[in-house]
Length: 244
Ligand SMILES: NC(=O)c1ccc[n+]([C@@H]2O[C@H](COP(=O)([O-])OP(=O)(O)OC[C@H]3O[C@@H](n4cnc5c(N)ncnc54)[C@H](OP(=O)(O)O)[C@@H]3O)[C@@H](O)[C@H]2O)c1
Picture (tube, rainbow, N blue to C red):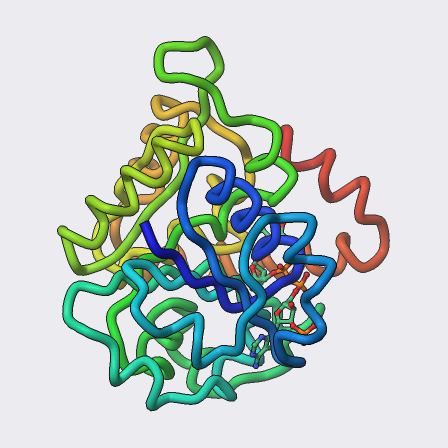
């Protein structure tokens, strides 16, 4: 498959290396241009490219940049995509830690609804609720004990089907959270965020959250705030807490 990745940080390079290893053709871009990506290209096997190039003639485009920068991506690139191109977004909104206040996002509270609006195309949300280190280390063949599952949400059933296949190739089960309006269940502050859970555990926790965002909003956003403070003060303690 031809895959374009926007973002050459921890998540973008992790996915680039994995997908190259699986036999896909991968191009990767950042905000500084292809010339800055020589080392990334060497390390991952992906082709260093401009943002324009990574969005051309691809079957899948993965957006892996900080949420605050989504609004600065050239919007025409996404609007010009052929029908059927799957756009994946891996982002998380961390207002106090990294992204600052984005009023429209704060209002809805559902990160990927805002991303969809910004890009002007439907997105599939995946890889946001697993650490890049877990993607690197925890992939297992189907049937192996402790195989974990990744959360996926999006409105386009066919697009999600393709994402399930990619997730499977990486060595994970997929758990379909539902439409993008339900993607809050996989956001920072939720009980399934970055917990490396098996499919059964994930399903139990997702079901326990119900489907009513107005009910869960206060709880999840308050937990995100506490987590942000802990990440700032003591990142190892935050990581340890994810195991509880
Ligand atoms: N790291 C993880 O374990 C992890 C796990 C789950 C979800 N996520 C989410 O995934 C997203 C990316 O995280 P990360 O950890 O990979 O971030 P990161 O290490 O800080 O890297 C960010 C990347 O985005 C690029 N970028 C920023 N603005 C851009 C723009 N306007 N156009 C093109 N590229 C741009 C940067 O390129 P330049 O350096 O050239 O600016 C950089 O390569 C975040 O929303 C994060 O919350 C990360």
